[in-house]
Image (cartoon, rainbow, N blue to C red; front, side, top):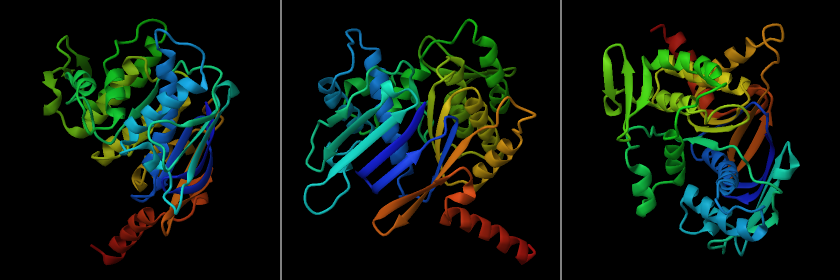
Length: 353
């Protein structure tokens, strides 16, 4: 599990020190406050480590190996023209520092790069071992409709699409999990399959379908909100999202109706309880309230443990962002987007409509 992230002069953050929960972490802020940047910087570091663990000629981590591979991943995920564009822009040459600390210190990593960096980072501390579990990144766009041949096209051509799409498509194509975990998987899948009214199938031609009592339906014929839940269902069914993994989900509520948002919230809580460290970025008051309701139901007499969550409020101050954090939403300061939603509800009630 990831314990903390420290940043200095990274994009909109002059300085930030985030202390994470091992269960659920919720990043809240208006557009342009760097929510996605926080997800992507952590994901890039974890994904680099996992990808190196799968290298057929893998060796123990070295600074030399990491300085190129990590830079490549950052460029692929963020898509800047050059790496130095991720450093906070100030007069003169500025250095960006990033440090990740884990529950198991053998995975700790810190690195830096400057505004003039092109394709390499400077490794301050390399991990002693590679991560053996794949991190999962779910973008705001669903990927099941573009899945057929997407990975081969992406790897054979230069596309202005972030590398998280390719990474997630690779995981979506993983075979279904069999064995001792099947019962747990079915428990997690049942409410999702009920919400999307069917089960997800991948045929031999690389196309996903929704199968139910009425037949077999191509993904483009399914509502986008259902396709987003279908992605989550597939990742669970293949065993990718199982014990002691990582999930990064950017705006889970995007293009979903309130009923499906409730199911998303329940799935997030279920995965967190099951040992997945979850990181989500949102500005949806509905999703936050649903998470609060679900977490309040997890009293010690109902569960083996109470779900521990951390909330991070991102606040724009001129040309930079300040992070406030706490164990409850009311500890992270006022978020304008959330306040506007509450104010609209108050105006509606007062109008007597």
